[in-house]
Image 1 (spheres, rainbow, N blue to C red):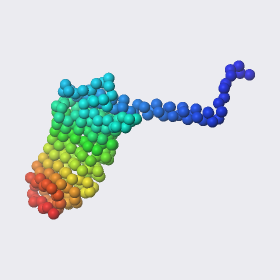
Image 2: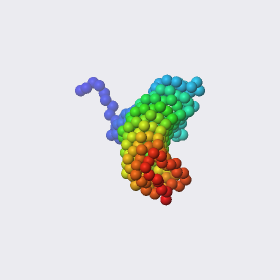
Image 3: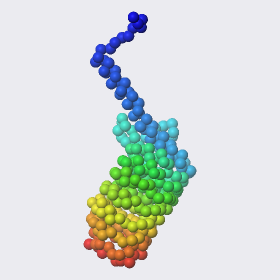
Image 4: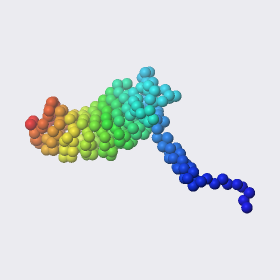
Length: 263
């Protein structure tokens, strides 16, 4: 007989012990994806910056939710996560860290009016909760990331006033929640696809002005019934335009061989 004694648990307690082990193992797997994950991502964002103002207060010994400059956290006591990052108008130089894609609860990203360079990291498409993305008035270069369609919650996309090149991906025109699309003053080329009609029920502001876009303007543009502001000036469009139902402002077409009409 074995000299070692084994205390056997009743079946009910054995099941409870097993469930407890499973819970603890699952919890340990979930814990890293909390505010600590967001903090690591924010530290990487700061490390990618070359110049930050003296007022830029990110105390690495504290939580990002404790008065870090530009950081907004959710108000749920048990699930503090970074939901907003506003570093606009701070004179920042440097680039956008790929680790920004780890801020998985981010809903608003405002980096406009700085001096940021480099490209938009492809990891930004991981921010599937993002509703507002504003990178305007920087010196960002290169093409847009592919798979922009992953940003399914996006309502505002403002990339105006950069040096972004290439074609505007067609899947941007398939963002059915998009209300504001501002791609003006860049170096985009190509044409406007007919798929812009996907935005007919949501889009209120469309600015593609001062690029190198060309070709015919699709008749589907006339289906944007909620459009309030439109700027296609400074491009190389040709042909005629279907009647447009602009509710408030109409900001002209330039360098085209047509005269638009308004319904």
